[in-house]
Length: 138
Ligand code: FES
Image 1 (cartoon, helix red, strand yellow):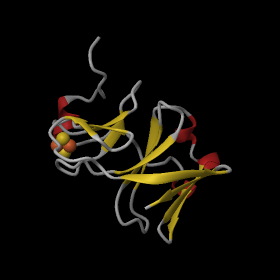
Image 2: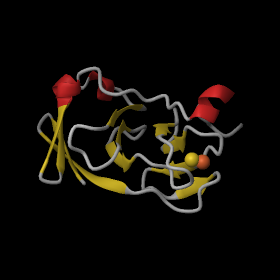
Image 3: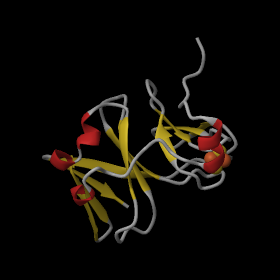
Image 4: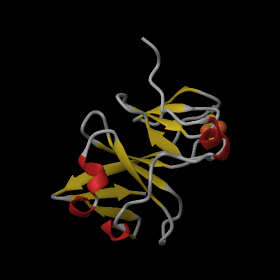
C-alpha cells in the first residue's frame, strides 16, 4: 500500500501548475469585512468530496483554497505552501492537501505539516456553513 499522492507530471511540478481551478462561476463568492461568502448553489465544484476551488484576486488579501474534504466537511487554507509559496491541491482519498511543486509538501486539514520540503504548518481559516452559504473568516 503506497502513499497517496496528487498525480502531476514533472513539468506541472517544475512550473507549479496546480490542479485546482478558479470557480467556473466567479460570481459564486464575495469578500467583505474579513469574510468570504461562497454561495454553494453556484459553486458546483464543491458539491463532491475531494473537490476544491481556489479564490484569488477581487479584493482578497491573498489566495485561498476551499476544499470539500474527504470527510464531507468544508476546509479553507491560505493557499501558499510554506516552503516556496506555491499553491496547494486536495489529495484524492485522503484528508490532506499537497503542494503542487516538486517538493510535494503535504499538510493535513488542520494545516499540520506531514511531509515534504516545507518546515512549517500552513494557515487554515475558520469555515461555517450557513444555509447554502459557506462563510470563511480570514
Ligand atoms: S513550494 Fe511547496 S514544497 Fe516547495
